[in-house]
Length: 333
Image 1 (cartoon, rainbow, N blue to C red):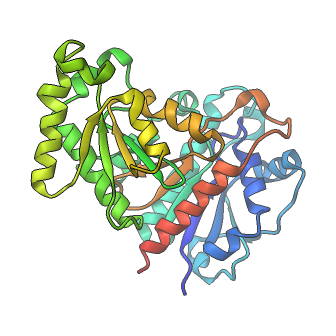
Image 2 (tube, one colour; image 1 turned 90 degrees about the vertical axis):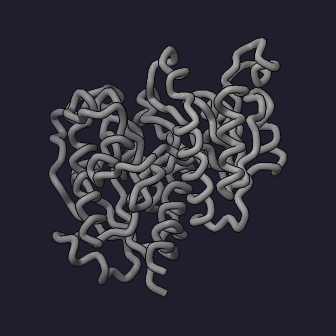
């Protein structure tokens, strides 16, 4: 069976991303699921292996056209994205943000040409990305703009078989209520249901979370549930999407923990992130949803505070890679 090609980047060179990639490549199971193509600077790879205290064989290539002829050994497409002199381990630098964006753009180009089937990137730093020239609120919007996506898109956070999505993301807390609309809820729920179907869930069990405490307490703590969220769920059911809820946000994740739900559509970033990270911070994966190709990354950040200390846990990076490989394989069938 033909293996998918998964492009892997180091993320922010000032963070733990390069070390995570070195630890990922040392895992034998990665060769079985996909053809890995490492994209980045040679000096970053050398430093990453020293930081991780482990080395892995890679085959250096010079053109994307060579990736489909790989024999399972990880390939390394060397690029020049950031100078070593501009990187300060454990600190935010615009140059590292620029480098992360350039490596990702190279991978996006490869996906568009058909040379790669999926992308898995190590953690980025949004401040560095913005100071380094990214004119979007986050990398998801950068990806969507690159692909010219006009339909609804959002981030998914996964923890094993549990997926969460949200109708608003990296915005100020004060702006959340204006994002709570029937159109956004319905678009997020439809995308969630369809994405889970594509990920292998036969009958996805999807529910929407309430916005207000105790689900609004019959309108005494807010009317969004009565006026917006419940009607949106009802209309989705009429369309053939068996979306449940709204359920109070302080109990809905108990249903997920107990295996009653496969996915939750949340109203804002921390409503889902706090729960998922408590349930399994070291295993969480973020998926860019609604794009024409799978793009995944660990759900945690660059962890500047532990750079170079040998403490970086590569489990989430590994899970992100395995999910990218699984979704990339789906594009080949």
